[in-house]
Length: 316
Image (tube, rainbow, N blue to C red):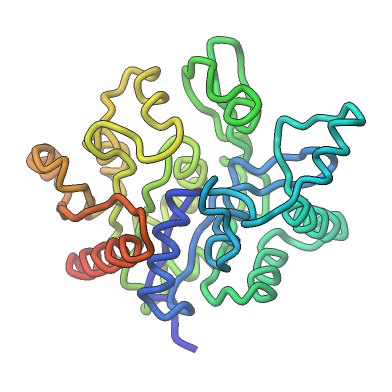
């Protein structure tokens, strides 16, 4: 089997789009994805892993492309019955999606690891790329707001991102043990590129980078590290990234994102819409690539994946 040549660091929807492009462009066994676990949570007695599941459904062809999350064609009998019983329904669980959560939760309680369960689910769904939870230990993103601290899904789904954000805390990140496969890949001679996907920096990428061992391994990685901006033309492609930036007093721009990663990356990819930002980003001792980064079709995803991989390799 070929060694991994590309490690993607990813959150949910935006990251999953680029991960699909990479899995299509590369031979799938050459791709590994370090997946965010900061939005994992316990709900209705189940362990829910939204970003891992979005990656899983996307790479298996099961994703609901209209919503960006969940399974295509899923039904809602469980939620309707739960609502009739007065249960919590603020977090939607489709019937097929529920089956995955039940199976995973049962296996976790039996002592299996999240990474082992995820690998087995990927094998059952025909996914040849490796989806690697950043850690088998719990890391939980806490959103600090003017109304008090909120678990990520309470902020994101239950409260619809309404509270004003003042900061973030990644509970457990300081002591979490990094997935050993990720550390092995980062030091492997076969690795040619590390790509930070266009996911929300605060709630998708930072929970991964908050683990000191992983961040240090990235700094020491011999392969070039490049990041793709989730901000195009001063707007977020998906989710509350722009709102969070504004409330934290940051300029909503690709340049701000590049600045957050400047100690880790060798290159930064931005859309031609943001050509004017190139000089300031290059002044951070970071190489740049201008290429279309809005992914509406599979062809868009593959073209961006190819551009990102080839750009990273060119920096070695």
